[in-house]
Picture 1: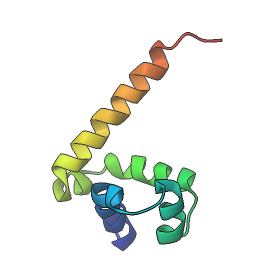
Picture 2: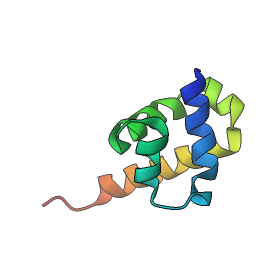
Picture 3: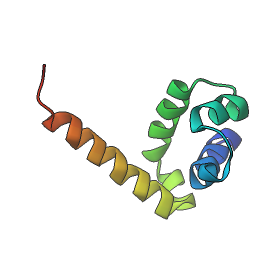
Amino acid sequence: MNDTDHAILAFENEWWHHAGNKERVIQERFGISPTRYYQRLNRLLDRPEALAQQPTLVKRLQRLREERDQRRAAAPRR
């Protein structure tokens, strides 16, 4: 994991302490779009190093991702 990966995990652990909305803070802090940020975060959640560094955070985010995926799969198609 590089410094940005570590910073992303730290940010996910503390982002609600920042004023403003999360997407704006992501762009200001990381210089990338929220879409790119979430793509990178999702890849990071599958890395054993991330789990070793922040097990509680990574497991919580994995669980939330799984729940979101299940809701999407169960939603009626239009």
